[in-house]
Amino acid sequence: MNSTSVVRIDGVTKTFPQGNVTALQEIDLELAPAEFVSLIGPSGCGKSTLLRVIGDLIEPTAGSITVNGKSVRQARNDGDYGIVFQDAVLFDWRTVAKNIALPLEMLGWERQRRKARVTEMLELVELGGFADHHPWQLSGGMQQRVAIARALSFEPALLLMDEPFGALDEMTRERLNLELLSIWQKTGSTVVFVTHSISEAVFLSTRVVVMSPRPGRIAGMIDVDLPSPRSVETREAPRFFELVTEVRELLRKRGEHLLPEEEARIS
Amino acid sequence: MSGIVVSERGPTVGGRAVRQAGEWLPAVVVFVLVVGLWEGTIRAFHVQQFLLPKPSSIASAFWTQRHTLWPAGWYTFKEALGGFVIGSVAGVVAATVVGRFRVVGTALMPIFIAANAIPIIAFAPIFGVWFNPISPHSKMAVAGVLCFLPVMVNTLRGLQSASPRQIELMRSYAASDFDVWRRVRVPTALPFLFTALKVASVLAMIGAIVGEYFGGALTALGVLISSDAQVFQFTTAWAGILVASLLGIALYTAVVLVERVVVRWSPQARGS
Image (tube, rainbow over the protein chains, first blue to last red):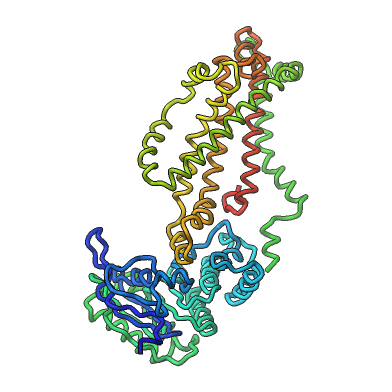
């Protein structure tokens, strides 16, 4: 049963020596191909740490992780990760097209192939006319779409997203949620999506992983059985609200309430 | 969508010229007023020549002495330029080494910061002894030392202010340290470097001229200004200062023009 998993996490623990914080304790998690998994939980539950451990940006203190049967280091060297952070993290000195081409340059693609792929990606995120713009000439939502295009440009096996829409306004966020889903359906990559928002997690995911803090661990998982493809109506379906309630209950049951501003964001 | 590009690049060439003229106009008006007021005040109150000559006298000395002043200016400019290049290159190299090897930085940075507070110009007579006081090398040394610290400190700060997220992203692409340096740290440092080079271009002219006040070739501008002042040739001394100013502005402008080409992507460069 394990041979088909894209990511396999076994007993991963991460402690930070400063302040003796246990960010992650004994995490076990498996991701199947083309799954869209959200990690949700209050601040300090280790969801971003878990994402970084998967992406080989942080080394775990104990436990093992494999990605497509390889070590995370090997996976990183093979270009298996596409990462999107909360900020777009674009390079001001590169045009939009060159930002998207950056991972392709690092992988040693030749110019013609890069150019063709960049054009394709710009179409995918609907930024066709902005190839020669610089990042600071774009709005926040457009910048984040460039970051997504860049992360997807080399067709990574795994897309790691750390609150990618956290800094955007609600309307932009909902539109980009839909765009992300349609891109995900076209590319078929596996997604790990860290978020603070219960409704966003339920709307996007095939599975929601609820985490609780101090020490960071998995409090429970909820399979999202909403019909696919999801649309604006999905957010109004009774089942959507049931699932949102289920996730919220799971967060509450662990005795860890959301911070007030997080409460406000999800209601 | 291409319409956005056109509108951001501004209107037609003619329109841009008019707009730029509009931006310059207030400064030109103030300049003319100040010079006019200066001329008028000195005529009205019969101020002594040695206190402050009339702008018209300075202008006439600037013209009649042009065959002495400009070659002298050029001589000094070459010293300043030499010091500017040597100091800036040394500053960039030092910043690169210190940025790369943390141990070196820990050992040297406190010393550099302390050295930054030293009035380096005070060493000018010493440099005159170390090198031949008549040769241009002692002035280049003063200018070079003056340029070194701001360039070094700013470049280092630039190299170190690359965003941690950008570096993390590069790591996720399996980038080597050299890749991170070339594609993230250096571009991030460029605006910092040019800020420092602008400061250094001014310091280089100051270093060369003040260096010459302590002795130098008779054909050097600093020597000319100080000897003219000693023999009460104040209008010529002022004309010399005018030449020094024009050359200083020229060097500064050259740095700004290179900056516009090299970091034209910068939002700050666009804005100004």
